[in-house]
Image (cartoon, rainbow, N blue to C red; front, side):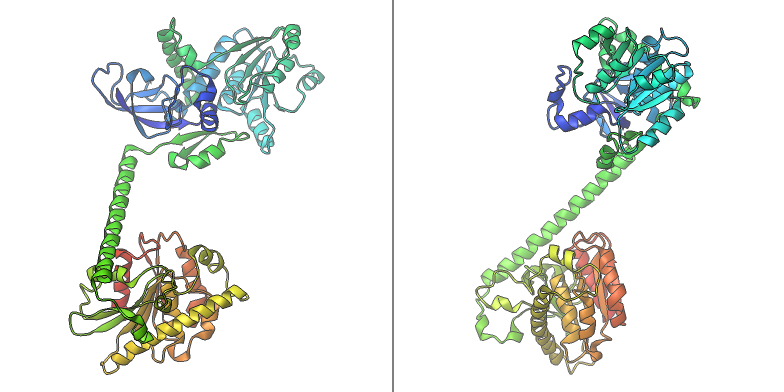
Amino acid sequence: ECLVRVAFAPISPLDLFVARRGADALFRDDLKLEAPHALGNSGVGVVETVGPGVTGLAVGDWVIPGRDGLGTFRSLGVWSEADWIKIPKEVMALEYAACHRELAVAYHLMETTAADLDAGDALIVNAANGAVGQVVVQLCRLMNLRAVAVVRRHDNFADTKAWLEFLGAYKVFADDEPIVPTLRREYAALPRLGFDGVGGLATLKLVRALAPGSTIVTYGFAGETAAPIPWQIIVHSRITIKGFDLLDWLSDPARAAANRKKLVQMLEQTAKLVNAGKLRISMEEVALDQWVDALAAAAPGMNTKIVLKPLTLEGERARERERAADEDRRKRLEDERLEALRVAAKELFLGPPLDLAALDDAANCYEIAPTEPWTGTLVWLHGNGELPQEYTALFDRHFLAKHKGVKIVMPTPRTLRHASAARPDWFPLDDAAWARDYLGPDPRDLAETDVDLLTKLEAAADWVGAVVDRELASCAEAPAPNVVLAGFAHGGVLALYAALTKLADKLQGVITIGAPCLLPHFLATKVKSHLRDTPVACIAGANDPVFEPAKQRAIVDTTLAHALPSLSFHTIPYGLHEVSSLEIEALEAAFDKLA
């Protein structure tokens, strides 16, 4: 066995057929693919390592597949030595070597079946904008033969026709155009040879366009259907139809070794033309991870051969490092979540039950007392569906370790005081509706749903304002009352509204995380004059999948910045729409700056 790095792998009609219908629809005994399997039947690779018993290949050799079904749409693979055919290194550019089948098929057809044609004779080829067709047209030009090209009718037909005429085609027809009448009007002899890469009705069209006694060689099945040719046409036209498959030719038991040697010779001959600029294939390199775009580009009507380019070995190593980093991050977040749950469970189930009905509204908060003399207070508003206790471990580990004198106050929505509350929501708005309805252009006319939302938001802001006023009153005698209001998502929106519209005194600052302001023009009209200078820091995750950072920044730059002179916007590298250690560290940095 040997380890082969796939350098390039073209998308072929066989790949598209297997992708759509599965390998069983091929009715081929030599191609058994068991799901899951990788696509890719052609390409060119470089041997990276050889195992024991490998004698015909060495490290650095260029190789091409010797059979279908190897699954070359990958960067690296371990295959049997017998699966590959060695070709001379640097024989031609790697991307052209990846199209060796197309080059070899066209060369073989012209060398064998077109050998009896005289200069000036015509042959006809369908699927002429495919790689084989393009090579056939150019070889006809070099051999002084007239190439009649047929392509499928499509929106890009005019460009296709111009391209094939540039390559040397004598005539270019769409598959719905009459061929024989056009040739006869010009007193041109009918083609004596046809190359069929489509099958189905396209084959019948070739039969009707050929001179009696001609030959058709079928080499492909892009149409994916059999040729429905009436026997009367075959009898009266005396047409001979043959088939040619390169891999069957290579695996012929009687001539396998000779044919493999002949394949290498054909590639060497075509390489001379390619390297001299006399033979070209229109192709486009697409990164393997962009395979969706590549499949779309391989649709009928495109004149370009799509060649997939896998990652290099270094690229694979970099991707593995990224995967490992993502896994470490996922594990870290899961550990933090489990730790938060453990802390919450311990305090919920081991502590004495609280009689919330006996407490006043302003006391319905979860608090973490400072372990050193008081230096400030952080009022934190969690997101919808969360509990304050979930943040205990995060604050202990990433915030209070440095700020031992800070008191953490985490109010809960007033709905929690009622047994009917299903979840701790500040106001009802799911993320999908938020992103759809409130990240677009503003201002706009308020809808009934907006008014209902703002009514609930204002009621929640009244409650949070009472909590914050209590904290401000408790530290009124301090030399510099240091109270900061912060929140995530729904809690961040609520923090902004409460700090700017509900308080009697200005806070040290406001911090929002992943919380694009709802209806910012409405908020601008509600800001109290003595609170307008409140410092505000809006923070967004650079990779936030819910609210795009660019849209969050647009709200800040276009609307809020005019109403709030002390406003800033920051992004968290690699940050998502969540509160993890990254977000708490960003919160800490903003808190320190405000303090």
